[in-house]
Length: 466
Image (tube, rainbow, N blue to C red):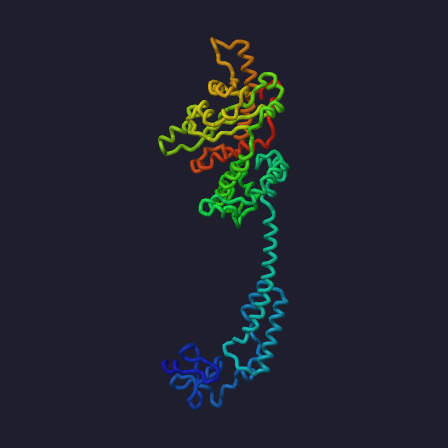
């Protein structure tokens, strides 16, 4: 019985329904039993054997070619029901309905056989889909335009609107100074190449082309670098603020550290003797008119290396921790005119002065002001310069003359301490420098020193020590 049902097939021309493909259908035999027809929803009689048969004197007469079902209400397609639920414009539905009417009329006029499986709505769905696709494409274009407009809004404008905010986020004294700085470096920054690309490429000529597909505007990359250096934000925090990955943040910071190191470092900061004399405050001209530079060393904490040898080299007896040490020199007007690279914390003031190269810049007749730790009078005498330091105590107490000299030198030498404080106010130096930054710590240090000059000159305020 079951095998016989599986071998049945529909006798309607153009229909491929069979018991093997659609076992859930009921197949009814003709009165003569020679052929079968698939009929759903029709009343039938069951024979004694249990086999369903058509009623007596009945013959299938409802077929697509005689327009059966045109007057019957049709259920709306899934596509139309979804569009109604999502609130698609009524114009789209009207277009779909008109297209359905046209398709029905064309089918009725041509009398073409159609499938009994309700595929006649395919044309209607396609017409509605085309209209919907056009609307969605227009909406996508509109959203892309809005996205471009939003991308033009710089992140720096979101956080910096006043001079105080610019001073906090960038350490530049005002908005005007920041944008003046940006305009001075923008032409060369437009050809910036990320350091990761420079490491991968072997074609030196290919580096002349800027790196494509930047996630941020160039000025926002500078602002990102300032957030890391001036504010001291962690890279993870910066990544969340700018909506980029931590890897991208690290790449941008290293790239801009090297770029600013080259651009700002290419400008000579060592000023001539005539310029020093012209900008010298009156207090310096009164007590030490020949001073050319004021020297002092400073140290920043670093992570302790795992190697015992490196630990001993970076350990500072003065700070009692592992440090990097650098030499800074300023003119009497307060501008930083000399920056050495960073050395390990165990180096002495005398040794760092000799290795830094400051002696090659001095001329005969110049005077250097420093504290008592700089025992460099012999090295200065070789180039014809003199050393100005507070006098050492001879005996149980200072003489009146030595006391007045110590106070005057301290009152003037405090300028270099204030200049170093400006550099240390870049909050990246608040925490211990990790060894992962050892490859770019010199660039970061020099960049902070050079950018601090944009905060304006320092000066001695009257006779009271600052």
